[in-house]
Length: 146
Image 1 (cartoon, rainbow, N blue to C red):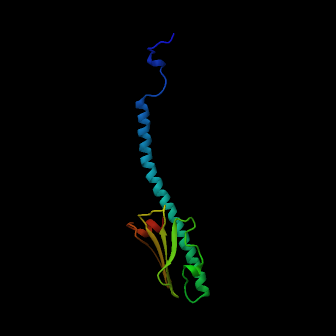
Image 2 (cartoon, one colour):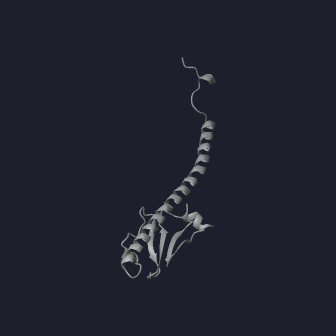
Image 3 (cartoon, one colour):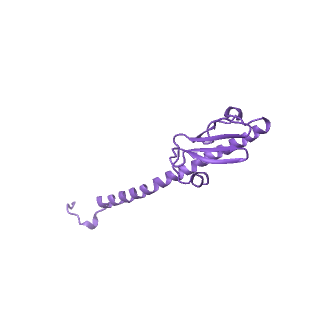
């Protein structure tokens, strides 16, 4: 015979309150972890821009050693995208025998409101690193050195 009123001690499973507590704890953990992870991924992808700009700089110097001026992107012969494809690299402005400027513009899905577009300029023996369109308070420290 099956008893309809089983004592509580024989019940098995979780109550709805226990399940709701677990859901709330998981939501709190996710609310903290997901933004931190997204920020980490964005910072890691900035290395893609820096690597591409360094490669372009090396190729510019090689090109300049054999020609009277620096070259544009077609002269250099490197792909327009960074190695991982998160940035589009271009020689911006006019090139001359002593100066050129390289830009690394973020491409979707790499949206970088803090750093925006990386700019690397060479004028004579002076190299300048900056950003365009970002909102970083200290772009050299925030964007270029991390």
